[in-house]
Length: 430
Image 1: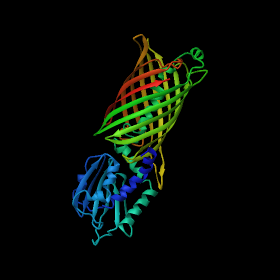
Image 2: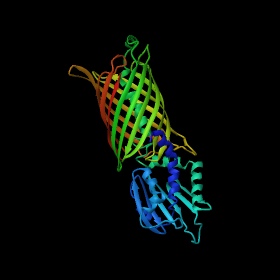
Image 3: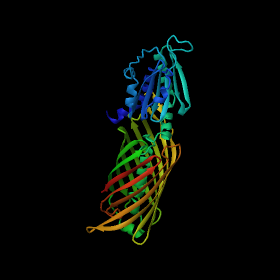
Image 4: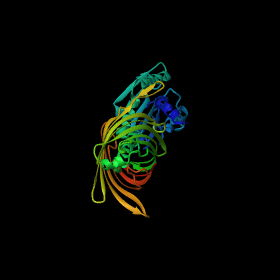
């Protein structure tokens, strides 16, 4: 299945799964809510007051499949025929919810067709009563279409799930933040320090195409997260001053969380403005999207940022200081009758210092760079709201005044709340 079909399917998956789950419904099975397994997606089923079984999975699709009539009947020998009390207690990627038909046919005290949905984390509780149980499920689906409950679920996960494809380590917001900072600081910091007469002498320097490969592996609470990114870029150098550079970027990312896949893509633009021989400002903007049928998540993201880079020489070493201020806002996603927005808005501060040391190896002039980077998010709450990275990179010359291509590779260690891991990268600009 191609990516566009997976994203379109995703918008329908969540409500359909919730509706299917109500085919099992809610009997207050004693102790059943306490038996929900610890997994990305998990359910515990009760029928007529008996806890019929539990199920845990790493993907939303497996969760949804278990909520079909066939899936429900596979829990145990307990038979659900559409007339009993039934309950499903679920863990939807850190969000607890209860789905129920609280009353059996013929039971006094309530309508057997009434369907209830309770999501304590969202302070959301609602009942739906139709002429039949199927009609009640349709009322629920219609309500999901009209409201933003899906967006609220994703916002909750951003604050409470360490593996949110939007905000968790390797997710859309941290990946976009890191790529923007890398493009405007770590990949280009030594491109700005030069006097004006050297810039004039370099008039007519070539444009640069860039291709890189980044791989990250992290332990995030009880999960294994792997991130593979292909950052593509094209830089147009100004003929008069090659320090003035217009860069287009196209990063493509795949994230794997315990086997559950998420996909990201974006298109960005930035323009480097040298303020003097040592200081550069770089405004940037980007539009990105993340889609994951496995994690039941889809969202767009608008970002703008301003990066300041300052370089000074310390007796054979160059020291670069980078400071980025960014603003992120998720956008509304529409597919079919469903429209929702996670409503995540935050400001990001990413600050770093880098020491560049010239070395000669086998007659070739290289440079080794040591970096320390701190990232912090404010605004909408995120489970991992700050990270620290320490890294080392080695490669050939990357001066803005050189007509040569350059190659660089390195590795960094990442640490944050319930998070630790590494990121390795190699890039070639030509």
